[in-house]
Length: 294
Image (tube, rainbow, N blue to C red):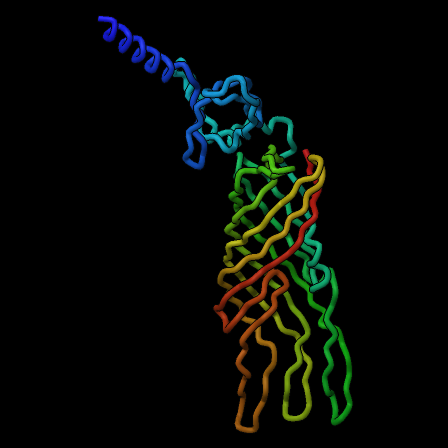
């Protein structure tokens, strides 16, 4: 009889112990048996259940899938960064300038708006000619050369929809909340533009100067990373690849047998570069500085 009572007491102790502990389910698959002490916005504090007199441990909430408390209540954490309330009061619009664009012959200005956590759109307008103009040298007479500017003039526009990774960053090994418009992103984007520029044609041993009108378009996927500083300024770096089409021809040769164009294997259209004959691969890259606005 005593053995039966003792066995029942042991079983009761084991059964009650299994339901008097909190369980932390981590993202890496581990389950921590614990006694939760405190739950904060970014981290929790706990003691190991089998060592309640031991040290207090701290674990960031972004490493936790859920906590099952001793009373059966479940608290989940996987959607922690998707709560719009965490970004209340943050500015959601920005004006940006492509820092590199004047160096290659245009000035690009962008407007970005965040529409939801991890989503937003960006529209850009580029003024071709508002920037550096490349020098061209051509032979206008036998052994007589002249240098002129490319004198490009035109415009382009683009529209892209951004899909942001959850806007977090790490400081001293801990993940902290970021700005709504901060983080790595993928952006499908469409470019369209038109411009004119000086062009040099080869005709025998003498070059000929003329104006060329170019219409172009491109569809790309741009990948980038955007940082926000103090809810006032931002830095955006990106590169993209896709497909492009245009009617640009760089150089021609008029042979005695008739018109014979060189193969045009690439083109630079200020908003993008084309690799290969049109239609061909399209590539972009850039660095944008911005100001957040209301």
